[in-house]
Structures are given as C-alpha cells and as structure tokens.
Length: 567
Figure 1 (tube, rainbow, N blue to C red):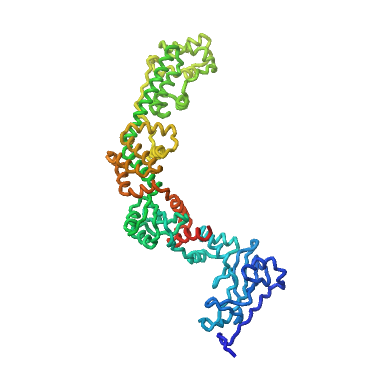
Figure 2 (cartoon, one colour; figure 1 turned 45 degrees about the horizontal axis):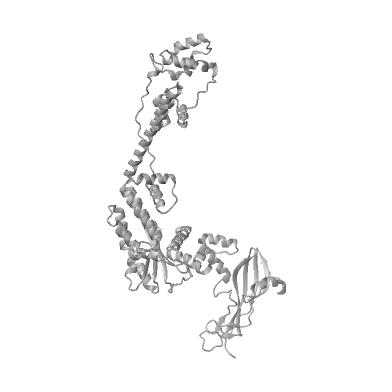
C-alpha cells in the first residue's frame, strides 16, 4: 500500500451549512448558465442578507498540475474556498467553491500534490474572480482609491482603499522597447519648484513612461535603454536637446509648433512691458486730442445757441459737460459748481439738453421769460418778485427763490451775465490696457485671429513706434513661416532680422539659431506635440484627484495601464 504525502490522512468534504436549500441543479439553471463558460458547476443557490451564495465545483473530472502539466484524476483531499464575484441584479455574489487537491503522478515533478484551478475566472491565492478584478482595476485607474471604494461598494464589492492601491501597484507596465517615435514634455510636481517628464508614443498615441525629473542625465539614461527611438518631438528645453545630442546615434529632433508660438508670444509680452511707458504716453496724447476735438464741438454748440435765446439751464449743462470731458466725477462737478449731485448725474447721461418742461405749479412758465430777462439786466430776485406779483403771480417768496435760485448766488450786486465758474484743472484719466491683455490682443492679431475694432485702434496707435512695428512684422512672418511648408525660408527670415536693434527679438533669433535643425524639421515634417500636451493636462487632473497621495509609480500606472487594459 502506497504512503500518502500527508501522513495517510485524507480530509473529507466539508459539511454544507444548515441554511443550504434543497434545490436541484435544473431549478437554478438560469444562474448556472452564467458560469458554464467559467468551468464551474453550480450545485445550489442561497439568498441571505442581500447576498447570493452560490455553491459551486469544477465541471472537469480531472486536474492539471500547474508545475509540470501532468493530468491527474486521483483526489488527495477537498476544501472550501470563498471567492467574490460581480453583483447580480444589485445583489452581492459570493462563490463557495469545493476545491480538490490531486496527486501528481509525474515522478520528475518536484510537487506531490496540487490544487485545481477551474476555468479562467479563478486565480490562485485570490479572493475575487477575474471579472471582479477587472472592475476593481478599472475603477482604481479611473478615479482616486477613496472614490473607487465608494463606487465598488454600491456594486456589491466591499474593499478598502489600501486593497485597491495594492492591486494597482501589482500591475507591471511594459518597458515599450519597440517604440520608435516619441513626444516629451515636462509637467509640474509643484509649479515653479519641481518638475517631471512624460514620454508619449506618437504612433500608438499613448503614454509609455514618467520620469521623476527633467534633468539631462535622467532623460539620457532613458534614451540609452530605448535604442530603437529615431524621432523625438519636444519643447525648447535645452536639457532634452543636450541629452539627445550626447547619444551616439542619429535621432531626428522636432521642435513643437505650440512651444515656438508660445516662445515668441512671451518675447512680445516682455517687449511690451519694457516699453509700456511709450504706450501710456501715446494713449494720453490721443485722449487729449480727442478731448480737444469734443471741446471745440461743444464751443461751436454754445456759439450757435447764443445766436438765439438760450435756455438758462444751458449754462449749467455746458459747464457740467466740460468738466465731464476732463474726467471729473459727478460728485467733483457738483462740489465745484454748487449743483445738486442728482442734477449733475442726469446731465452727464445726456447728450443734448431737452427743452424745459413748463407745466409747473403757480404758472412759473408764464413769468419765466420775464424773470430771466430782468435778472440778466441786473435786477434782484426780490424786485422781480414784487413786480410779477403785481402782474398776477400767486406764489409765495420762498418757492419763488427756490425755483429761480439758478439766477443768483444770494449776494448783493450779483450779475448772472458776468458769471464765469472757476474750473480746476483735473488730470485726464486714460483707459490703459494691462500688459498681459495688451499682449494677448496683439499676438492674437499676429496669429490670424479676427480683429475687433478696439484691436485695430490699438495696433494703429502702437505702429508709430519702431520697436513695435519691427517686432510685429517679424512675429507675423515667423508665424506664417512655421505654419507653412518652406523650410529654406527660415534662414532667410533669420538673415533679414539678424541686425535688428530690438534686443528681445535678437534674443529670440539667437535661440532659433542654436536650435536650427529642430525648428527646420517642424516646418518640414507634419509632427506636433499636441497629443503630449493633452496627456500632460490629464496627468495634472489625475495628480490633483489623488489629493497629494499620488507618487511617481502610482501616477505611472494610472497613466499607462488604463490605456493598455481598457482601450
């Protein structure tokens, strides 16, 4: 009699729980059909506390040794194993598997017994089915571990955040040794302090690696480990360029169009900042000329009104409009002229003074012409009041003075004809555009964006300066150059503007000269780094969703494995 490896002790099948229902297979065939392709045979189903308990066993009569591939039918022992599966109709599913151990009869095998692994849904040493593992991975790669835990809980899968993170760290991204064309760009760990590098496969359009920094040595080591790379689309970073240049094999470098446009835009912004005083003075001179024109028009209006009898309110209206053109606020005008602020605000909103509404109480409109004429001739309001009372005026003196107070200042011998208000010189307020907005408006015009009337006036105003005119022409020509298809035009552009006296433009041309081949290739080949910029934006979102817990390895798995597993 042969001796068993476990000391002649054979374990038996574990008894089923008391709640095990007396259901035959055909009565559960609907649920059992779900597991036919998984190599499982469902014996019975139990429902307890919103959980479906499925009691299963392997549908195969034999087992295959995972160590040597030997097929055996001799059972050594049995044991039970609980495995979680995806929910069914919103109910959690727990598979209770009757697992068998077999004797391995292969004398050359190092193992005497082995445990069966039925079908393709059950993993060794795992407590979840393959499809359940896939759902966990999908949620873990898409959102943060905390949010994934909540979403999985609603699906009947109860896991902790740490378990989800362990599953993600168990993934092993491919090294992608066959990649030939890549795009690289930097991304910020902490903006302005530390940066990393993202590497994109331009042919497959998916990220393949993340580097913890953007140093030259780090990227050179990566390139040396990927010897099939022949094309690199990059930004204008000198570290990447130096790393590529130090490798002893031909590699085509292509400067990204987006970064070239960004570089010249930044140069233009800096130039405007250096000469912002010129723009400010030009705006003020234009404002003064415009005010003078409007003041002359107002004087012509006054002279035309003086040819006929003018409304007495016209004097106040004209003085208010004069001070408004000089940039005075309503409260300043009211204080200077001694007029109610509400009246000043009303006059400021008017372009033309409407005719006087003469339907007032006490029939003032019947006597207004006489009162204004007599007041102009030098009579006091007291004398005029007694005269109109003899003519039939019924009003009292106080309302009369209040109604005609604009004709006198309350002082003796006051003559309205000699009234000349003293106006303080007020500094002209200019509507200046900030530097960044000014640069955006100008560069937008360079990049063929439709101009607004305000942008047209702005460019016309700045075109009187040599520094702006030369930079504007050079930037427009450069944009048309890199969006065209004539690589030889680049050297002609550099020669044309090489002797410029605009230092900012000279610095940009020097940078183009140092990176000439890469810039020329971006005109010659239709390769851009747009897909790289898109994944950089996605990386920023993933990093922020992780609330500071995303290390480099976890970010790498989230960026790389999602594209490989689920797309």
